[in-house]
Image (tube, rainbow, N blue to C red; front, top):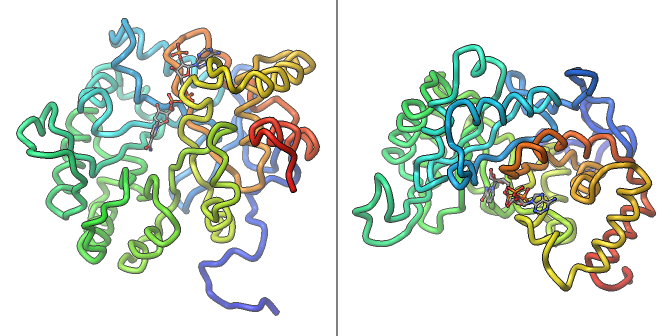
Length: 331
Ligand SMILES: NC(=O)c1ccc[n+]([C@@H]2O[C@H](COP(=O)([O-])OP(=O)(O)OC[C@H]3O[C@@H](n4cnc5c(N)ncnc54)[C@H](OP(=O)(O)O)[C@@H]3O)[C@@H](O)[C@H]2O)c1
């Protein structure tokens, strides 16, 4: 008998969880000779284990529809079908850049994640007096309509509340999220940058289950492995998404990370991949079923994002990299 009977707790390994540190028994889709794990978030939504992030889409010198289609095509060739957006990306313009590139055929092959609640005084919110968060029903409903219109789609696959709102009325926010799911405009809802208590507060006022929390996790930002964030989602069987898995590029530049780079490079050479793939594989190896969200704009790098899924990281290798990241051995 388990000690507790709370139905939300996941005492048993979910069917889709990894059976060992090297890979998983998750459903895979084959694409051009490669296979990519898929992670089931609820009865209707499955994401690719690696996700392509579109925060920097508007920073690319080329934002033409053809170039965006090439980027998405390079992802699809590797089985990466999930695209991560947010209303605020590119000063509220990145969703439209994607929308201009989406053909009906392409849209049907991908899952679109987007986010709302950050109101910065730029673009359509240029009149805002101060940057703030808005988790009111009116803002969530309006934001969903903007996202659907800009991306020229009839539903969002996954909507996330982008940042915890210290002024949140959880009853209002929770019922607004239930409402957008019931309307069919959003297939599933989750959060981003939430701590466990923020998650519990919002979930307590909802009928729909939150399916994921997108948080910063990487060798440069490893606190979630010990501060309770990953433990919380692992216990509940909710795979977290990891933003900036390469530290937003700092992994390749920071002087303080030289020894970590040396360790990553040695593994990369052994396994014939690049250093970044090993850093992402370090996240994939963890039993919490983390979904890394990669943000490169470089087409050659996009074509190799899937390499991370081929890298083998055993327990000692995982701890070796963790030791370099910590700058000391574990106690
Ligand atoms: N929920 C949130 O609050 C939140 C916050 C931040 C980000 N995100 C999501 O996470 C996604 C990923 O974030 P991110 O872009 O910071 O992730 P990232 O993959 O850690 O970093 C991407 C950056 O690293 C650089 N880079 C990658 N490989 C490199 C290499 N081999 N050598 C040198 N530089 C390299 C890229 O430059 P190139 O483009 O030149 O390759 C790019 O500037 C975003 O697009 C967004 O979807 C979410």
